[in-house]
Length: 223
Image (tube, rainbow, N blue to C red; front, top):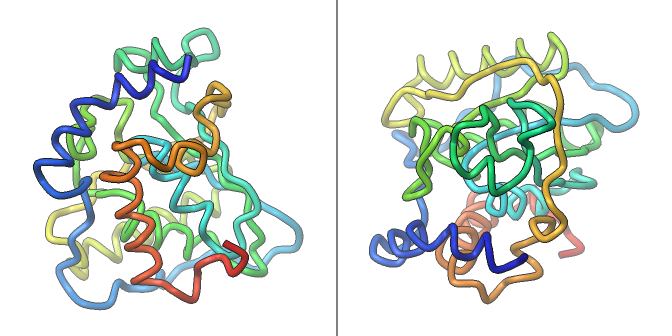
């Protein structure tokens, strides 16, 4: 089973190899802005569901973030019957490859997660594609769990667009989370377990390195 995802990423791997890496966000200015509007401090753990291209890559980035307890790859935006990799890969199910992040607000806020999402994990200005991964299943989306998450996400997108923090307008969808479906086991922790996979080396690893360079204070100490 593990062979299937490797084969499906071959076009993106070729593109990344020729271009010297995966699709990366290019900021129009030096320091990426912090969100002016953020979630209120809360006790206990919370979750965030984000979609930004291949979930192997977004999972790898957020697994490195201090305050993140768990990251699960999966699907959001479609129904249970079609929440299967082979079907989602057709781009006709309504799903987006997504990650479910469990985090501690006392250590990292929802807004700070979005800052990493917009500046490191993917290119939020690219419509229905990340690099050579093309299709609505690779769209940029924030699936909010409550009105506070919606407000923070929409306010931050407006802030970034108004400040021209990126060279093009953000196309990220902000939509309610209906259901998150966990992906097949072979997708979980994929970058760590398959660190020599050329797709990981050329597309995922550069994003992790960008996280370390841009936000060294946010990188998990024990990794």
